[in-house]
Length: 332
Length: 300
Image 1: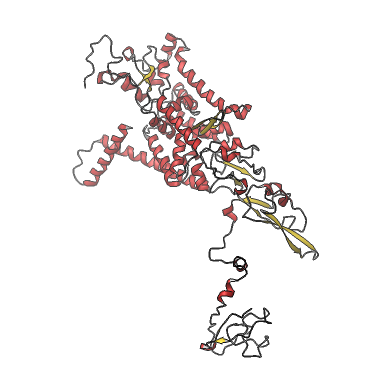
Image 2 (image 1 turned 180 degrees about the horizontal axis):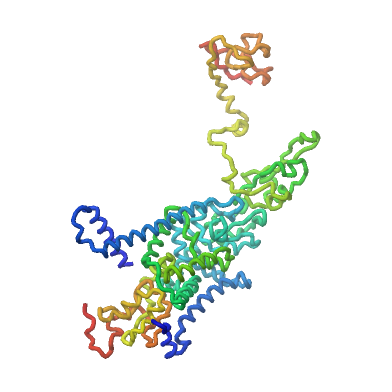
């Protein structure tokens, strides 16, 4: 290693020389030194190419096949591949033997633990032995309640084959769920095909689903109609700016956001005097002919026709600039 | 050495067993370690759980591979206590006995590359791709850099050492192909190619054992009859010369090079019993110099 360091500094000397005067006299450069530079360059290029290849392979390994589920407590794939040293202690301590280390030919990163829900789901041991066995914390030791684990997320992936969607009462996924009535509920819908029955729709709630895979394992259809997949693959996100009116109303103790701020009606910018067939503009005084109240030019409803027509209306036009008025909120 | 086999002289002088003492001990050690790991999955006797990356013996003794743990640390992950304790134990052990003892006494790939080296010699395969022995340190640096930049333990995706051991314990899969590739590479492409030139695991352990007190020493180097058998069998022959032939330049008889694997094959194969295991401190230039010759040999 020492000799090696000397060799390194010599290389940089050499390159400095070359940079300084390639056109100058090069008589001092011996063939041996040239050879040394070439050898070093060859070595660096070789190792560099190996490194690039390895980095690419590592990137690929991040794309884990969706049906390979990580044990409880595993973080996202990038963190996990940095934390897991592939010792297999989790595999050994799983009392149900569902975990396996990926073999080199598998598309899962070599040597890392995983299970396949369809053939053997997580049995959700209360003491979580796989996590406790992990020496690196690749399986997070702060996970002490198995119900808080998020190995994946169940999704009813095929409504065409799910027996409950066909109007039958299978309910198997619902019944085997360890977090029954929270992670999977049965939502009632009218069966429009028969016109007289109820469909019991298995509905997954991501808030409670641990991704153990028992539903997929138990699904009676030949190919599972409900599956457990990595949550990022299937979980949507509304976006920060979305507000669900009914949720906001509940949170505010019965006051809706809209009530407090009033409806803001933006000008329609139609040419003066123009009328559009069927167009309704709650802010304008124009109403399509034949609408309730269209005969009364003074009445401007604050709600669309058919909604609250009985108690809507009677709104004073505040400030008639441009012939349009922002309707004040109808007191209700 | 023409038709004469390396070590033939030692066999005829010391007997076969004495001329293979350390080799046999080493193979026994390698097999015993593997057997301990296999006893659990094959016979249900769980003395050791895990593999060389991390293992728990008798449910109390943790042992962690410091190289793989270092990569994990470089990705920014903080391991649990047992993992760190295990790494500390292994570090201290190899600091004492010499890092590359891992290579020659523990590594499951060593018998494979030893076999390739032996067969290469037997079949008289000459010619070898030339790559600097320092390449392994560059590969080591590259793997650490990848861990630091890429956020994953990239080397473990292809590491034939851990793949073979893990494969034997947890199910081989296609790991045998990689093992075979290393064997064929060592046999046909590069003499002592994998362990002696490329493997970053060995490179890591060689750095670990640079100052280890336990060393092979050419204590009786004066008795050397230049048969060259030790150079023939040594997987890292460059480490022998300074110790064996350095008496004239004031170099002591202890093999101090970090890449000596402490395999002890040179001890076996020497008919004059020049080599022995010893401590690095007994390394006076006069040690092992010509006893008959006048003492002022070393002055420069």
